[in-house]
Length: 333
Image 1: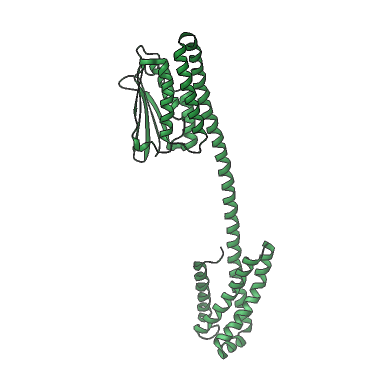
Image 2 (image 1 turned 90 degrees about the vertical axis):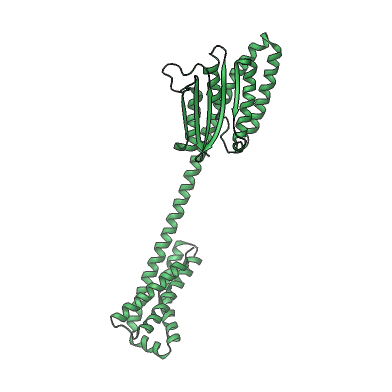
């Protein structure tokens, strides 16, 4: 929008300064008369330029309208000042015919420059916003594709392992194989339902983890003990789907499974200082010598965190003082 009250006040101030300047150098009569003439000419030219910019449809039309608005506005301003000042206005114009023309051109040049610069700034701002929007949409599309790819890597990774276990149980324990197949179907249904939704919550993630661990429980039996320590108040918090599962799978596969007698898996959540902290810890065999928390699942989590939150999220994997491994994931709450 070209018109604004601050801009109008600016025009009035410039007109006043010009009147004061003319009075100082002895042009015209009293300051009051110079002020009336100055305001009439300046505001008339401003109104003509404003009309040209609002009504002209093309840049060429705006430029032509602004060019015509300068002499038309100056003439209208002089006429208006005569109406307002009466005989004093006529004397002012008669005594200063060429000065009136000069003042009109001065106003016209200043106001035309103002409108040109404002129009150019608006154009550049519009182009910048459009370019930023295109870049943001392109970046969002790239991140969405990357996230879909990373999430899609998790599902078959777990699915292949489960199907391999199912093939073994079909021969050795058909009853357990049947329960495993039923749990797997339930997990797939829940996962597909959640992944079709635009947003997910920590409660959705915990629900899928419970189903996932039910499947693992058929395989490990008493060797896998699971504890959830997630406050009810945090379940509604937004949370990327299947972000914790790789940490849980990593703890079970590399920590608890190789340990004689198994171990305990604990999944905890807390909020502190505007950050949501998720902790997946186990009492398994711990990090291997030289291990630093690497591997397919952990790298997948790190890439998703970087894509979703940038430097605002973190994943720390280290040995637990009581044995096993503790993985701490933090995201903005």
